[in-house]
Image (cartoon, rainbow over all chains, first blue to last red; front, side):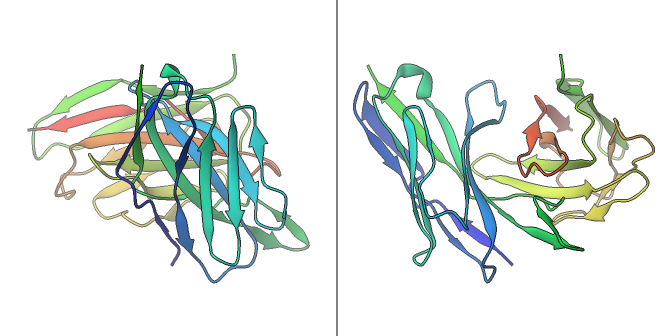
Length: 123
Length: 112
């Protein structure tokens, strides 16, 4: 079974500074997807960034970027120019790639989540 | 607007009663999911469904049941057999070749 570990229960950063959230995972699969989700106080889960394991290039979405180290099974999230609106719980998640009948895609398996990191932004 | 709706936002029940949580999506997604979230925990998969009239147990299915009679709907029943039903429940869906899951706003269930 896959596991996802987030070793930082809470992180704090000054507004406009950069912060990195850690995530490691364990899997025997070679193809999979990794995600970072944000959960603000409203508790709505919001997808921040995604990474396909077969892609060597690290994903970037505006101020959010990842450092994907496949061999180390590490998937950290870097938030640049932190803003007050970034304050939230951040969850790292894993999903295996489904292959059936020549079709490869997300399939319908569920996500495996880490326990989350509470990010505090100091004004 | 396309999206996922869950109702109600807050639900209160007495111990020993079954309760059904609603999840509806108009994204035309084939796959739907139920997750449970407890304080200090990530989300854990309860059940998922790839297509209509089919569903699979997730990691913590005991004490829960689901049905998938329509593509748009995936209700979750929390039965009296579930030992610790008080939690936040999230529904999600995904479709086509997309591997992303989109989440509803969640239902907070309190059982006393």
